[in-house]
Image: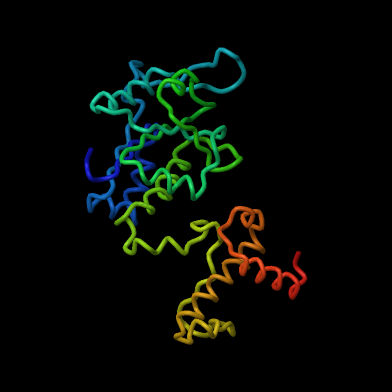
Length: 251
């Protein structure tokens, strides 16, 4: 395998992925050789002269289904050149909901293939043939898998060493340790009467880190209390939240 981490995406809209992933952080990581992106157009693997890749479902009803053969041939264009089976993900509303833990797990892979569906879905037989895992980005339905695939790739890529300018910078971000991120501030010191918290100007790193942690606890408590059930918090954290709750009358 190559030293870079490889993402192959089977899609009907390769230009959409290139426009987003080809720039910013992921684009720079590709230029430096840390990431490799290949966006495979499924239409290139249909035998239909009109490049048709869908057909009516046997079950009837509205909409069209993506046919299995063009998808399989697009997948084979990748897999036939390998001596291993690449881990293959299908972006699907039926899949496990994607979260930070899954991003960390997938970031340990050297190669991942992502299948993006469209229309009313994909023939189940090709999913059963090539897919290792179905992933959803939430309990809602989108018109295609491209935007969810880009979200997954972006979240996974930034966990890969070297992609971010500071490899430790993601460790204080929302969800990384089960808590939401603390508030952040920049210049000017006072903006429209609102001041930067004094502790951040103190130069006392121990107090600043304590403030950040407490603010993360408060943000999670107020905005995503469901996350606290599985968050990495200590007995002291629990006591802090209990005191905060009593002082603010927030249950």
